Length: 285
Image 1 (cartoon, rainbow, N blue to C red):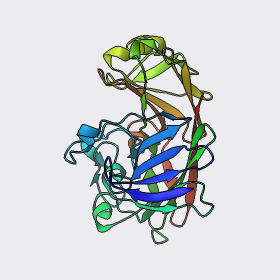
Image 2: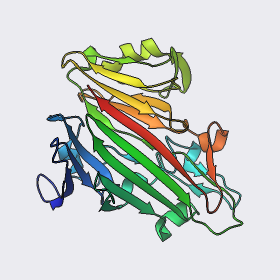
Image 3: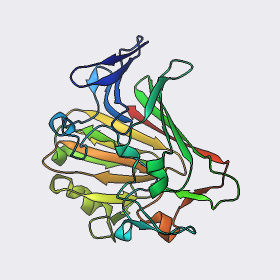
Image 4: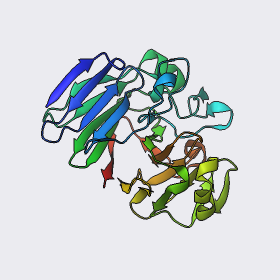
């Protein structure tokens, strides 16, 4: 096992499994971002390094973290019993510095984000988010534990959680999916749609949410490879997003749809002192 800081091609932490050579590159200062995942001698993630080098721009690549909301809210406002607060799209976790450490069993890395005065102004809860990220044999496992460490007696902490990983593909026109249900929610129109029609538009750009009954597989027909997302409830919704001409697909596990904290549709809540654990795994073949 190797766990060390590196300066090239950008400042990051590197974790390498000696048995396989599989590698993670992580930039905790940029939202706890996993920027690279090398598995079976192949880079799995997409990263626009030129855009990444400009901190003023949103990242296009790696595995951004979505918390405490997925998607956006009307007017960026979240109504709480204590008063309305402002939360921008996908929340703030992807924009803040996290801490990084080696897992106790040295099988991967631990990323941690805790509430600060800055987050309390936007989201008045003393939370802690911990992500255990483990490269396994032909797979990447991410186990997330979320704590509400607020004082007893306050209102429960509402939240959604998701991941927004970018995966390289050879050609959007030769990319297909297995395991998606026939109907979906088109985020571009916020209307129900036919999944097969959305998939036919991958080269044009899509953004849709589905509620699959099991794993979802992304198939790169030109490369002859596949990537299976195995996600467990409550983080078992799946969002598919493309942004042509980028040769990438985002295959995202979410706990709740857009505006879940307002609609109540799969909204999660934690009372003071409570915690919950969310699991997903990406398997390469």
